[in-house]
Image 1 (cartoon, rainbow, N blue to C red):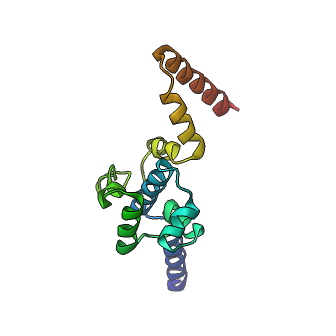
Image 2: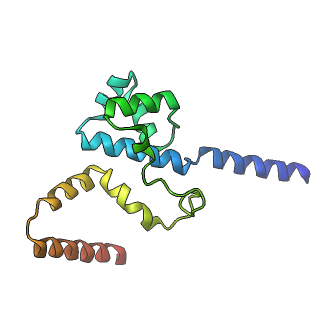
Length: 150
């Protein structure tokens, strides 16, 4: 019986070990955001850091933790202070830091770190008429409601 308990704990520990740490995910998302704002590809960033684009992908997804010296190099290459990667990081006591936050709280960084979201944001910001921007927001809301009902 004690053996079953140990096996259960081991399986749960393995599952938790594979789950990305929320801070690593946040830092990775900030790397991706800055890279995209600069119009730099993962390949180009990897080249400048002596890494493969696959490694950059893993860092950006938070799958692999970025070490201190690597983060220092990334900050230099991306032209930002190291603090940039920690800006807007969830408070350690919050539900977000423990991964228990409502998924809707993640849509903003997720949106701007996707190619479509980035392009949408740039195009939306160029619309001069506030009424047209409002109509676009209403259109997107109605499309989102249609999809969620399917």
